[in-house]
Amino acid sequence: MMNTKYIFVTGGVVSSLGKGIISASIGKLLQARGFKVTIQKFDPYINIDPGTLNPYEHGECYVTEDGFETDLDLGHYERFTGIHTTRNNSITTGRIYKTVIDRERHGDYLGKTIQVVPHITDEIKRRMLREGLDEGLDFVITEVGGTIGDIESAPFMEAIRQLRWQLGRDAVCVHLTYVPYLKAADELKTKPTQHSVKELQGMGIQPDILVLRTERHLDDHVRMRVASFCNVDLECVVQSEDMTSIYEVPVNMQKQGLDAAIMRKIGIPVGETPTMKPWHDFLDKQRNAKHEVHIGLVGKYDLQDAYKSIRESLNLAGIYNDVKARLHFINSEEISRENVAEKLDGMAGIIICPGFGQRGIEGKILAAEYTRTNEIPTFGICLGMQMMVIEFARNVLGYEDANSREMDEQTPHNIIDIMEEQKNITQMGGTMRLGAYECELRKGSRVYEAYGDEVLISERHRHRYEFNNAYKEECESRGMKCVGINPAANLVEIVEIPEKRWYVGTQFHPEYSSTVLHPHPLFMSFIRACIE
Image 1: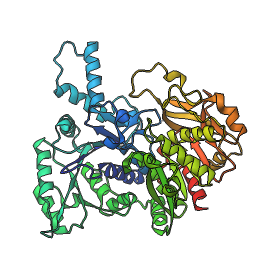
Image 2: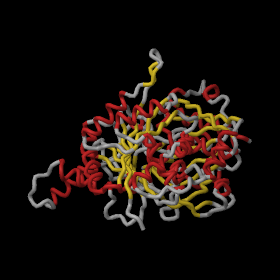
Image 3: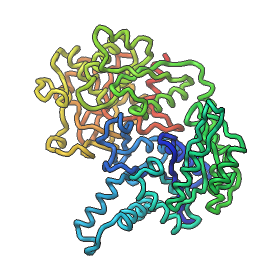
Image 4: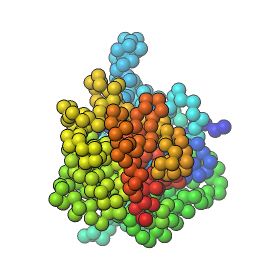
């Protein structure tokens, strides 16, 4: 068995170049060669995790099976590779410093002065090497968030510099930069890349491989110029052009030999290029999907990344159903009884999105009422499911003041209530019901059929409030069935109205476990209903 190899992915020039997609693509290509891989994200911000961040600030918060709130890039890692990430795959400056400070308070440093070097950098290195985790990995891919030159990322760069020296050929650095096109000069500019590499070299790190993000194709002359100015082999200068889909990126990287370049740098025989047939079959289905299905996302965050995993899950399910899912954001704050029909017009199906807080919930309730009474397939996720239940209680059970304790602590009809174990919690971060929990499905239900006649499933959660079982019998008698129950705590996980074409709400987040090669069964079933 070979030593574990380490790949460090850094970024320069500007942020949002797609380091997460490149990291996930490298992972996919190495998996295709038979290697056991994991991918981890190191974020320079001081928050312990992104759980308390506004989605406008950082996009969606992704949740691992073991209940850790993480950066959305972990969603890309899981969707591309199918691996299950954990809390060990998402590290922030805040977690690093907290660990070191806790040790200092415990007296572990024997009176030494605690400094960024070596104490903070040693803890970063320990996490990068995944010390103490017996995983039998061939490759560990580490993506460092932010951009070279950010003051926050300096300790991470120093840790990488030290590891490159310690590990020798067992480590490579992949640096992602931007090559802008200046329209007035009709010219591609490599100077920003040269400056970015120079800054990296100034930190003691020579990149082994450069991935150049570009909107225009780079000819060999441009690549040669980058290679010569940046001390990188020509075969190690790879371009990442804009693709019609992020799922084309691994294939594009393989065509240019990115995985082969990594293996040569590390000293592993390259061998034959894997065919990746299931991935190519998926891409063929994506290219051949001609018809469109229009899905409305009713939520309050007008930002693509805020519902990233839901959007990708819908896209994947559409492709496997031979259609293109065209997604339309519908701001729930702008929905009123007078305009709800107009706002939802033309939608084959509606997702009532998750979220927290009062803002926009009445619009979600109006949307749920409209879709329920007009036979529009509807999928409510987490808070979305709770809004479907509140709407049902108000308009079918007749409790006009029904609400959630989250929105109205004084409501006499708290059909959504705070979980018992959440009542005395004072800290916000990392204290919700998080991670995978079991759910027992009712035989004969729509969700039971969707899951392929499985009785016991496991799905990921992120919430504090739950369906109030005091209303369960009344809901069931009036047509809203509680078809998914957590067997340990008797919590309602799934509701559906069987008489409707497709009207399902889940307390959990199915979008977190939908992958390219294994789209989630509930999204598959929902899209089928929308097509019909």
